[in-house]
Image (cartoon, rainbow, N blue to C red; front, top):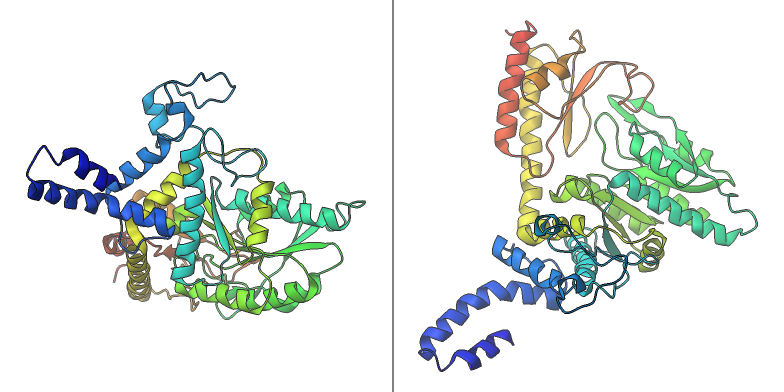
Length: 451
């Protein structure tokens, strides 16, 4: 339509062939945007920066704070101190949602509302296409994983409140198989629940929480079960399939902390098994760990569209549009093909990391822990100093986790050997791992462990 308008307005200014040639270039710029607005699905090919800027500029220009003829006399009119401050949210000063529903259309923010609704649809389409075909709906929220888990728990509490209005805390406990991560526990407590932590056992090198222990912990006070997929070795994923079956049989809500699991086909398979077998209410994952955005957002999804509607109505107030802009910009710049390529690179990097760290461990008299983990690997640190992590930090290696027996982090009271975990997360470069091996060899020299 815009091209037809230009053709009509400009046909008397230049030769038709030259004009049509120019309109072809314009088509290349605008067609991907038109396609996303038509299909509301992640495109196969990624966008360039010009398309991203144009897209966000067009949407943000629809909000009322850009209306120079408006008499803006409300308490919240999208006023910003200068254009630079406004640019930090890509022009979306009004944010998203309304006080009663984070997904509601906002009268002062037509463009922000389109951004909000479109981000959910594109997130849903991406999750379906990379391996979760039975996801009903997804939303992008401006909160990281822990706070998003808290929102899921608060939503579940409100649902239980309806079941027993005279005794709103009749269901006051959330079962969580032990995972040494503070955010999920805080999310449970934030919603007012008491976490019931199920202890783990050692199975070979792995740490796992037996399903029978989870089943035995359920009482009439149980409000939900919070299971975990992706975590650092030696912790294995929870038995999501059996937990989902149990939750379906007993009508207990089931939330999954899938913090950085969306990047891996292994964890996607775990989630599919749970969805097929039983009950999963909400799955939570961070935007930065899975979709390469700055920290501050999460994607919550569910097989149930109705449950997502209830959750969106539980969110308190409006929200910043910035994490949604970042998510959309990231996934639109990648496209489906780009994201799948990153998943394949992650898998290859994980294999490379395993091989090289295994060689290094053998060279200094250590060994790899025998644990199936599609993102991270771990090696023993027997006889080495506790300051290995600090020494690596000084060698400009960031990210390793060093845990000694009795320390928090291994998801059990006392893991039998000290160890170090190293990750090959999505978006990491092969050069990162080459530098890692070089600096591990420097560390070995500092420790007097060179051959």
